[in-house]
Length: 288
Image (cartoon, rainbow, N blue to C red; front, top):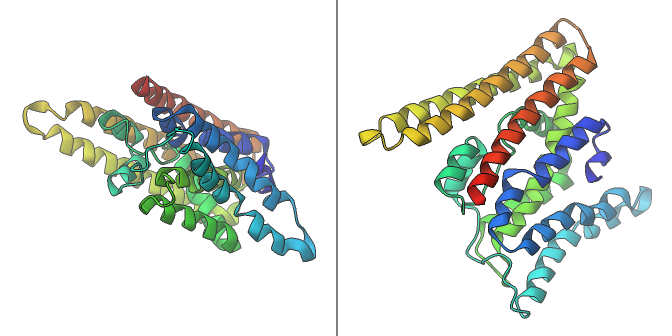
């Protein structure tokens, strides 16, 4: 529902919700108490008053209303800990090594399932890049501030008994909405937008090369001990190649001034659905 404020297309909004609700971060919360997942599920609804509420001269009220999700996370831990409910341990936070999950969720889930899983899978990264470019072009300073604040809090040490990892729900939510916005942007990209689409396709290709190089490095580990990890990097590379091809098709359609919206949506939705299903299944199998 929250994404409908910026995303009008149904399928773009659908995948935005799917990436937030079934993304690596949300699935990783299964390592903690079920109430952690419940808290994450309430965060989008707490942003609704600020998003759909004040208009015109009362728009300044949206700023204090935007603090509701932050206050909810703080209040949750203040209430739960005296009740002897430790939903998420306070040592859990975003580490530098967890960022590898942004480009290789298969690898991180296999190596350390208790790590903080971040990212939006593989193919949705193209839409995320488009969404970020649209965000910066529109100069949505409020959203950028909220996103940055969530990242900073997630990297800091615990304070007031709040687990830093729960602050990540806010930037993850922002990224999922940006994926939906970027997906809609790719589906409606015209001739003037072809350079942005080409840039997204090139970045997907670069990520494919990076993961293949990481796979090569794992194959060189003594006695073949890294062979299993190498295969996971190859799976990620295949996903990026698949995504690069999908975005490249849209680029050539935009260059030829061919809209064919139904075909674009079919390409984007099928590619993302395959990626989400395969990686989510892998993460769930590792957790269970």
